[in-house]
Length: 121
Image 1 (cartoon, rainbow, N blue to C red):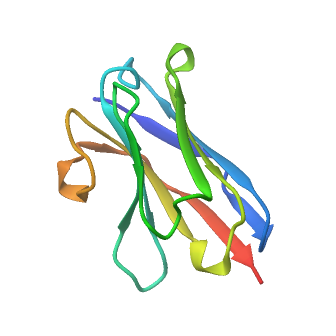
Image 2: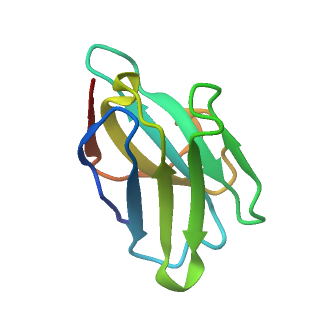
């Protein structure tokens, strides 16, 4: 059973930055698609970004140009660098892995427990 553990969340002022990390218990970061999703209070969980084994990336329109997904295969860790944060980015952020998924939550097999990001105005 793959385990994913997120870290790096916290409270930040609007315009600030945070870097989330997702550490995997097995060597999947280099061979699976790794994704980030988020769920704001009272809303459905939504796609944020993914990175494939071939380093293809994509982002939700709302974060494109502000967020960057990357990975360190040696550390089996995926990152989400979040810049120019806005109050609308406030959510629980989840890391997930998939053998071949992209944008759909249902395509992902393993999920972390989530990390809270709060952006104050």
